[in-house]
Figure 1: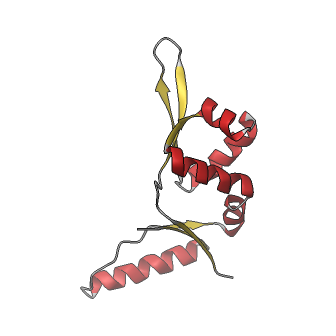
Figure 2: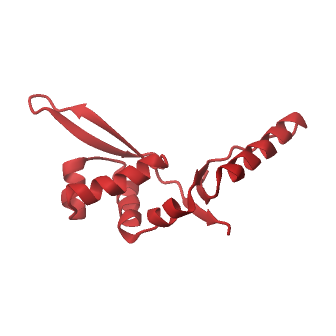
Length: 124
């Protein structure tokens, strides 16, 4: 199973949904689709070298504490948060807080794609 990011508009998304609904209406077997529709500008932003490096890191680690991620990637909190924000917007990472007994809370970053291949497709 692959995660597919497609650049497109809301109309493209609804065209895809309509196609799936038609398959269901006709009684055909529907193949599961892991498609995330992204704004073309965001798609290009995801492909920035820093973000692709972050995705590769998370593929290996699966789950990491923000401070460890910051140290390992040699990034500032602001730049790392910006990258995580766009990856989170398209459900490529999950960000949550977890209690750290006696030391407050940790910000945890978890990949949602595991070892799955991520395909980027753009139609112009």
